[in-house]
Amino acid sequence: MSNPRDAHRHQSLVKAYDIRGVVPDEFDEAAARTIGAAFVALTGADRIAVARDMRGSSPALAAAFAEGVVSRGAQVLDAGLGSTDYLYYVSGTLDVPGAMFTASHNPARYNGIKLCRAGAVPIGDGTGLERIRAALAAAPPAPGDEPRGSVQRLDLLAQYAAHLRSLVDLGGIRPLKVVVDAGNGMAGLTVPEVLNHPWLDVVPLYFELDGTFPNHEADPMKPANVADLKARVRLEGADLGLAFDGDADRCFVVDERGESITPSQVTALIATRELTRDPGAAIVHNLITSQAVPELVTEAGGVPVRSRVGHSFVKALMAEHGAVFGGEHSGHYYFRDFWFADTGMLAALHVLAALGAQDRPLSELMAGYTRYAASGEINIEVADPAAALAAVEAAYSGPGTQTDRLDGLTVRLADGSWFNVRASNTEPVLRLNAEGPDPATVRQLGNVLLALVRGVGLGAAA
Image (cartoon, rainbow, N blue to C red):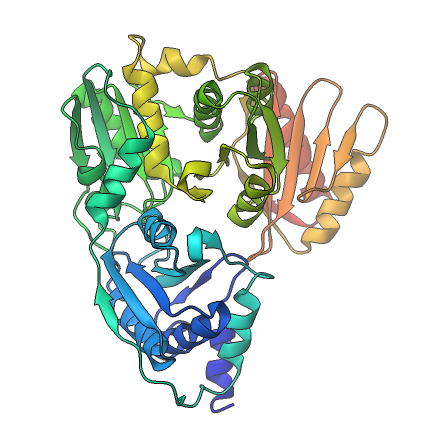
């Protein structure tokens, strides 16, 4: 090992689902080069697709990764700037492994890589990332005897957009005005291609590609980051608003009143649409989505499949069950017809098609997919997450409750309420989600849980 300190900081880049760290303190070109060479060894591929987001560090890191790939004799298919689902399209349609350089919704000082096998099959801890971690801990690989690979430039953005439009019929929609907040991320590049339709009047908000994120963080899950979108929807008298995160793989929706539509509502809407063309199909939902999702799926004749949180778990279950669609509370939406991969842009097309096919406003349309009140995700800082989970489980172990440990702790109460508490993979935080028949019940349940955690001296609300 040539530099133990570098090896240690580079190893910390590898997370449960991707590679991510601060540039250059944690993630630098040397690490990217090593990862490129290791990725060739992991996949055994002779061609690897690479795409990148608009962050200032992305071109140099992607180029270093490419150098690692060609040093091992493989060819780099440089797909250029694009969203993460664009990289999945390239990987799926060309049947090659792929690497997307992005740190998604993280601040500007971060960057990372999302890796997939041929056909956009995800790579996570236990399915390949552990080998990347080991390569970063070892000495840099010596030059091999094989001839160097090459770099081929590709531009498949128009084909990507055409493929998405082929999956959702917008032919009969009424005219719609839609405000789109790209958050200075990659949706600023992909939305003009995908939403290029004569009946769509797109009002752009922060479409300039700028990895410094001068207007707001590219994380629409935080309410502050959709405030401008909500205001612009009301100002324009628009039919709806769409917000994308930095790499544009997640989509969030705002109705004509400037009110947020939850990802659970969107999941239920798309699930029922997909079940009309594939009756009886399986639909995967993570355990944080509203109880309304499996209820509506069942009522529509589908088979709901409950998943742990995280794209690798959702995609694996979709493949196992041949599911036509999957949705998560975080705004990730997965489609069988898109290699079981997630694409916020395809979800947006489904919402536009559903809205445009009838005359009601979006708020009325989505009311049919809402049955319960929800807390949203509450982060609770704790000194010992395992002890906090044990304390909550002990308090809710009596008659009238049902518990399971599929992902963290889920408790179902006699009044129909439920909550889930999960430990974060990266920080001393518990993530609480609760749902019940009405807001007052959910608020009271949340207060009781917060008091319980604080009462054992383990933390406070973040």
